[in-house]
Length: 319
Image (tube, rainbow, N blue to C red; front, side, top):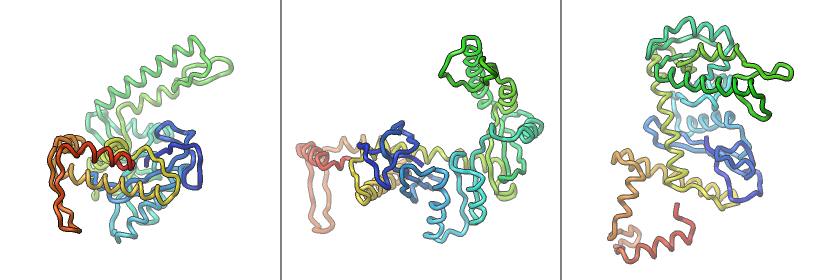
């Protein structure tokens, strides 16, 4: 999911203020759900009103795709923000498999103790525990341990500084208030220490269908979705959006989705990024194009390219 805000403060049924990933919470926006294949190729998208909770979008998007294409077996891979216990139940009710990130900090103390006892902190080690949300796969990484430890120590130092010199308005992770004076939250610190270097994943796929390593590898491929959004928002210039009626907005997003599909096809075919491909294209000073409707050849020379680009920009079609 991503958000696209508009150059206006007027809202309607589609354009609504909501949680903005662009830090533009005062301006109306829409939510765009993007579905990509394992290779990162965009295969479907949906538009939601700007105040929609993103956790409520995954079920209708996936069900619509399965119904449209008569998919027999489907596995959703998504981050923790997209999945709730309710969503997991709905996925299972619709025979949809899932691999999702787990927020280990929100687990019960008993489950955290079980993870702490079961994992031996060997780099690359993984364990699998049965929970109410399916199998919980936990993996330990030495690189993640160093990163988590550094971040935790930095937060603890900030917390200690606030304990020594109380300051209003500052919210720090390892602080709890007891009366008038903040103190270190030792219970939370001990809890965090037990989870250093550990990343969790929920899935309903049994180990004979997908091993722990397969679950982890598939989840890590989520970066391709983020990459697709970066290309769409920046390289393809999805924003700014000046439309205010629903049909032009839908058409705008459709054009951007088509451009994303073309650019990803170019990347997969050539092995080059779309940015590099466009940079090379801009070096072309003489081009021949065939109009397949009239079957006439159009020749574009360097002296006309600037004029053509200016004309295109005047139409607000540069994206």
